[in-house]
Image (cartoon, rainbow over all chains, first blue to last red; front, side, top):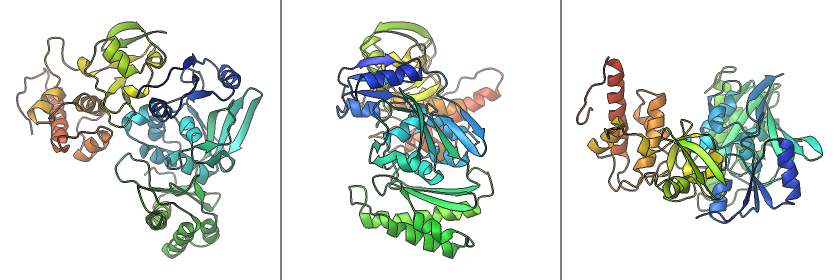
Length: 279
Length: 170
């Protein structure tokens, strides 16, 4: 349970970090919070020859709000995310991530880049159409959440790219519901519902390789009164749109049933929650 | 690589490989074996320490990353003269441990909680200790201990001078 040997670079700038990633030609890994990378290295499932530690790069933390969008620095810890008030949906989602000691170290950028299909933040990013700000040796680019998650633990980020911040639109109303066996576990089913520009968006995690955007259910809720009956219908449409697998945690049928129920709960919470008030 | 940080208020400096975890550096480099290693993959919580006042898994951080940081381990809880911290005493009094393997991590998580909240509910205590696994006690006595320590520490804050408290305070 000890990692294999690696070279270590404590990067002092984004330019230095992406330069080192490029030079390593895919053999390097970025070390942010380390809460997923270090266990994988301890288990020898990951053996990067170079570890680029980005924790000391100035300017990668912090948050700024402008035009209804909160920009969150990639190095922002889950603990800070759970304690901020600018984006209540993200604060609620962050409280569901792991345990206190995990939240002390784990970062927003790391969670998004790791793309665990059961993680909370990719679900919220998908529901909100968040945008990742990405640096590479040639410059910067923006990747919308819909184009970022490519499969389980897979993104469209190049080997020489790193996320430096994420733009999360602030919903007018929102609801979040997660089912996990024990407090702090990854969710069997995670649902985020958010109303932006008068339209309800729904994303579900834990039920496929990437977060599922429930477009049929969203269409059902467009331009109608948000009643419990409409929510039941949207929940049914959401559950019928997913294709979950059996695994040791739950059967596909159970995940489908829980997707319907937790979609319903997230939507009811969205309706009950007065504007801008945290859970 | 050379790395320097403070442990329980004392400045230390040591030579480590990049792959040396902070937990191994504390245990093998500094002889502070109070920090226990159970799973070495971030699941069990036995190696929980405080880094700049926040709980972290010492097995999920490399020692080189701790440069300039302030580390608190279970060895830093008792007073200079060996007087146990109220939490440590409460764990003894309330039978909050059996084999003791998970105890250092439990104490660190509980210490962080009591630094922030003076009278946490049992539910809050359970939430905050959810990342620490105990295979002996069934947790009820651990929650009792944290609650008893919280009451004792809150009572101590109310008094002008610290008071000697013996036995369980529930």
